View (cartoon, rainbow, N blue to C red):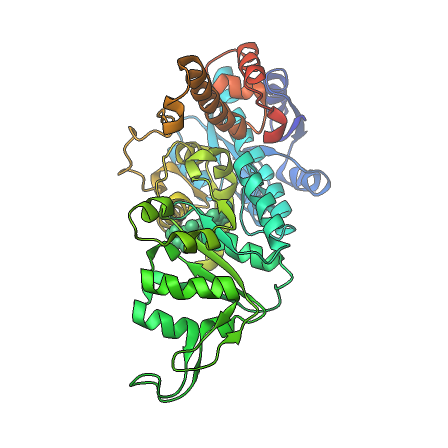
Length: 464
Ligand SMILES: Nc1ncnc2c1ncn2[C@@H]1O[C@H](COP(=O)(O)OP(=O)(O)OP(=O)(O)O)[C@@H](O)[C@H]1O
Ligand SMILES: [Mg+2]
């Protein structure tokens, strides 16, 4: 689709020059306005991807126009034309919300490059808006369009329709908590309680009485009957978070609940049936814990009826732009700040990080960025990523155990496939599926990129 640009300048020759320079080089149409007033009335009737605007104009000047545009169309990208060497007006333009300023007179290559960048930003904002809207209508709070996340969403839907025990595994910060909530929210139990229990934060001897409840006199401080969390979750879902960290004695007691769906409060003689759905989660390797005799096998198999594994963020890099947009909007609202955009350079940097703490770590960095940022866009200078070693590049080849058993050629092919999906996927995601643009970012020609995409079945459509 052609990008649309509105060029505003009282000097008609200047707007014509912009049109003649940009239209043949960028896939765009340039509409001309010869005053701020005319620009505002055109903006009322049409939508534009970008406004290029002169500062000095008779009547309403460029700064005032910029203010009005930002008040009415806060997401519209505006680039100002400033007189060469006039730093002051350039600074004012940026302060008032312009995305960039271009000194006049300009070099042809320079203006094409900068307008292209501004358009990229504008298209990125537009696409993220569309995806967020799509998300609002979806029952998941989880964001992600990548293949691994689509698989997770399918599993969530499937699991929601049954009552079977679910075990969610995944590294810290991958969204286990949100996944558990999504399963509950989509299940027939959705109008009944969802009770999360953070197992390791409760001392083991208290965990038992918390979960099962107790009768008056069951132990020294039991001065009255107390209902346990299992009973509180009746007809709903109980979420046993970080189940890998509980000791063997409580494992034995939970095994009984999983098998019989019945509980016995401490000090009681009778058991009671409970109608609960159990979801558990862990970031531990339970198979290893079983091998070390720290986790009961029978308990593991009862828990692991429907397993769901959340992929680490480094395996779904193409989701990062969308997740960032969502998290920044969410956090700005929470922090009672004006919504902020994210510069494409920041997105690019964030897509290159290894994220050992996954989405939680990404969210922390963005929160700090929001705090530091003064303008309405998160820029590189706002992002505290200094302590992240560039050596920890997510593209470093990792050879899994099962790969060493493959013949050399097959193992190499697999690594190549993974690398190309990751790398080219990230480029296509940045360019919103535009192959020409992605090829330019890769410093290769379009045809060569297309050949690689064909060989490794990379579909540009899935990035649009
Ligand atoms: N796919 C996603 N889309 C949007 N936000 C996400 C996504 N995944 C995680 N988050 C956000 O990241 C943070 C961590 O998610 P969550 O608590 O579900 O992870 P977790 O796996 O339970 O982490 P931990 O192991 O540290 O308990 C939350 O603030 C959540 O809102
Ligand atoms: Mg958690």
